[in-house]
Length: 376
Image 1 (tube, rainbow, N blue to C red):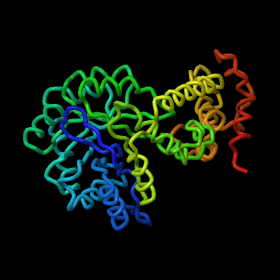
Image 2: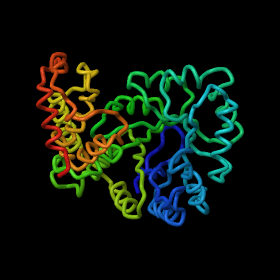
Image 3: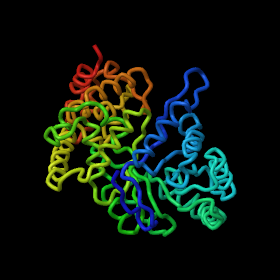
Image 4: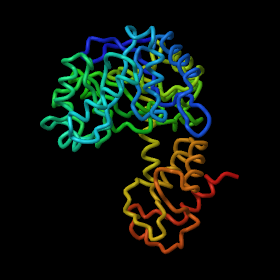
């Protein structure tokens, strides 16, 4: 396993982190983590050198922290626990109550890296950095030894990142970065320049890059066994990324990811440059198809045209056809996060085409999307 200094924390972290959000679950109506399966999986990661494990109160039907607590027995002095506090209000007392709940579930006296969970700049200003709020509660908990390091996970526009970092309260950050979403690339460098440890969530694009893609696999000209390996190596090769966090639910995933993270060199400088160049070209191609500007919205038939076209781009531009078809099927069934009617509901009124700054033939492309992604 490869290790890196984790910002200015004085800790060396494994390149691979264990994300405890996709642990095996029991069957039946009241699902919880299957502890008999999950604990050996987590401990196998520890045996292979992983020393950072990330969980949260709501993962795995609110039982992930319990699973992590069971798994760290006998390992507590060798591994670092990360968990999160959902900022539900501006009360430091409420924040403290949620911290104590996590400590109890984890069955531990302290948490190594405790995150303000999924915050944005507005939340930071109005609910976190306020009198008698979470920041004050976190500093007090740190003085008491209940948490070792104050952290945050970031979900906001890239340009809002620096102001949170510059507050000086945080020692590490968790943010998204992968082949398909490089919007935080500058923020990774900024966090590192300020001494924060940098952990990446979604290195495989939340599962999108786990699907086979000949286009992405060919980025490394045959020197990667899968799309997922290409994606993980790309993130690990970033010089200012300390940890790539992977949600692992099987022994096979642990073994494969640990093998990749144990290599001395994830990408050569030439390979990384070639991957970046090719992904930029792919991004430009995707924007020719649809930039996602949303000018075509609202559709009188409630068809979310940009969403459907973004699914189509996974197939047409990145070769992630299996993933695209799965997402399209969920949209058809109304199961997706984004609500939309389907191409068959289009009455060809032409309003969208009149508003499109790229003058796309949207009606025809909706038909093309359905034809390409509908399961036979």
